[in-house]
Image (cartoon, rainbow, N blue to C red; front, top):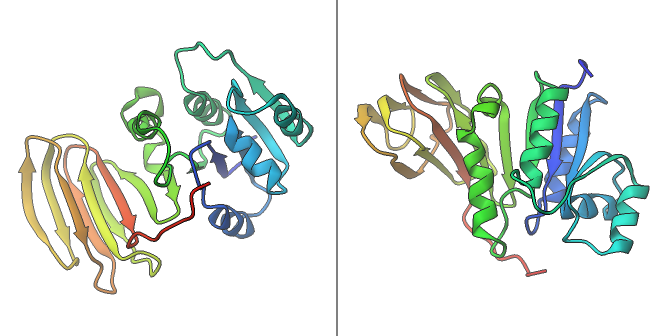
Length: 231
């Protein structure tokens, strides 16, 4: 398993961006795991993918759908509905152990327009859990119109991406010496004693430098919202 460089995980949130999953898989060689989480396993298998692993209590699928998942998955990890961890937490913890040096790509963790707010927060709050701290800066959450990453203290260069209109920097903790350089709205070294959302900044055709000496930052690349038909 040491050759696994990427882990692609699809959860059960609404409208996972399947086009981005296909694009990512096309960029990678064979050095990745494809993992489904609960109903996300059904979405992937019904889209023609064979899964390396599937995790969940599968209470959001029918018995026939569960059999379909099993038939199109190398290894299924089943859990009871009553448990301390979410299905996503279980999948990510296993993937972290199996491929500790990989980059982790989470689809279907952030729903579009519909879905449970508590599931959304549980997936964002992964960034706070001690067991994920050594991979948090290698974790990306994909949404049809947003992309979420996390930064630890240090100096970071954020490259512009033509797919997205805005760069939002949302501190998840108090921050020390936060600086933003090269963006439409720069920021001189500033301390925040509370989490602060600095949203709707923009690239100017060049990398943006973000630095801070203490804290945890969530970075969201965002498109102007577009209407998707509800499922």
